Image (cartoon, rainbow, N blue to C red; front, side, top):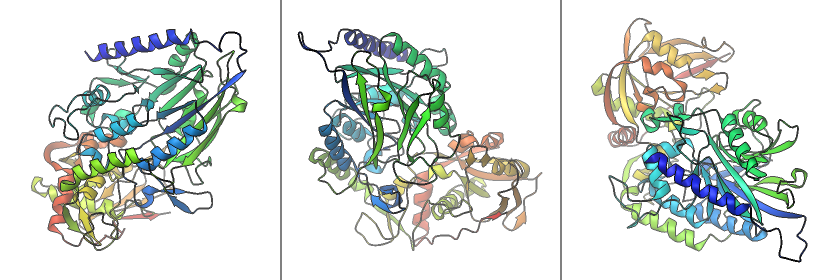
Length: 565
């Protein structure tokens, strides 16, 4: 049944291609213009942020190092209207992770409000990101085709029609090799066809729970792009862009800078992909950049990403030759536009956001605890964050009944700040609401406690460093170690203690982690060696219980991990 849905989608695309072949260049007796202009407007990593995001997640850094507030669906819609008014031949695209890890007013309704918002903005294509798989392939298909949730029903509105645009994934297949998603879509704009290819990160299974992608295969990105680009070219689709849910890390700069780490995965893919591809919209890393790479034919090609949470819109203005139907690269340009909040918000979107907020309010605005200061996800130089430490402490406390002696949690699972001075509940500074706590821990991961030897525990900590960079796990109170930045990978950690006592390489230790890490997520394969695994509560429930048991949570100092030379 799943494969047949994809076959039906491919049949629709084939019909569109046949239509493209007969599109006239101009009315009879008129000389067609030599070129046509088409604008592609793309956003990425929205993550259901219908409300304007807060804190650093709601700001865009400018070239001079200052920041401006940005984001919010109603402002995103208003800026889309502005950009489309400037260029009648415009298409709106999404580079993935529009849903998943969402705030409570979208997540409580399985992100149906966000899909409704994307439909209202006439999104034409969407590549799947890793978070589209948070609830598994069947839920992804429900978001595409519609219908009520199999367990919770239709809670947001009486019916749910699904996405009015295709979910793309040229490198996503079933284990037998048959396609699990459409590889591309063809959109007509300005009288010319535009091929839109979607590819997600090959390493997607390492950043989601294993059961979410069971039965699926994620192939190498460049090979999938090249295969699809060649097929489009054979059909006469010469103007091609890629929606790539993979990204580079940026080191600073404004929205149109290209200060990215050398050798990043998006740059590598964009430089290696077929010369048929005219531009690449990237995502996943939540960074802002506007770069140019050289394709295999030696021609420049735009590579752009628009941060996250609806703060930027990546705009690609294409000049297309009507005779060849191909992009005139030297006369095309890319830029990032800031979704500022200094214009009138879109009224239709305001109504949708208000509806989602009001329906979620009875749960979202309930007070669950208090803090005495900011609990933030931004790390200290050691990699610790105040919020990460509190979450690790909460998870240790919640799993103590299973014998847990320490807890480790992944920084990517800490999704939002808990600032002391900004509670949307209006109850006063320091109040933590359910909605705020949910925004911090939105995945619904299950806590697990497993046994590792001291040597295995140290090996897990060594896995924090790879040639691509570092992912520093957040550790519970009582754990301390040092790491050397200059030491080689695999030999960075020393002085590992628990409760002030050196960790014995041969002794067993009970370690609490979420099921994502227990399955080897984020490359921490050492956790899969754990034995005597026992279950625990949801990560969110662990945090809620901690706030309930500890009124006035104090931000812990970053003294659990020490950095040496």
